[in-house]
Length: 184
Image 1: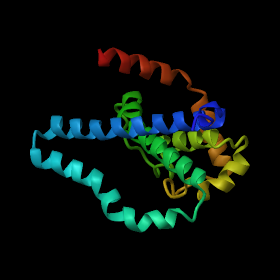
Image 2: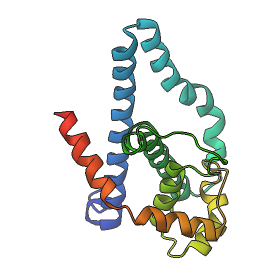
Image 3: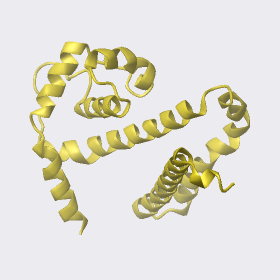
Image 4: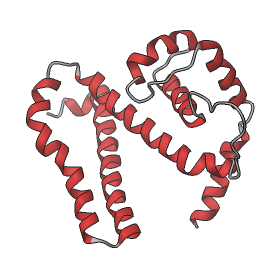
């Protein structure tokens, strides 16, 4: 047992699992808190708690043996990446993008196939999965994050939209400054 404490790889893995579990626990508590603040209804709070426990209680017996057939590292990293991308997407669509463009009017033409929030999430996944060029990323994206983002761009469109978004790096600092001042 003490040999494990000397293994740097194991310590890094253990710390990553602890951080992941803490994040999951904070998410669960936050969901209950938000449900309580928004509704003040014990029924809604009970439904939130029940919906958090239902997947592991019902599906655990069936999905457990199925997941034993796949590599654990891929499942763990994939699940955490999905959680991160979903949280980023929700933050972008609910707070950041509306703050940047509060009075966006609908004009002529079709809306983009991939929204700005999806584009940022795809770029974040590209960086986190260590794809250094867009050609390889867009070829691998359907198998890596296609379940989250079914509509993907062609390489020229992806490059053009990423380049246009990269020309506006100050919006992150402005939003963080604004979010920090309203949190106090």
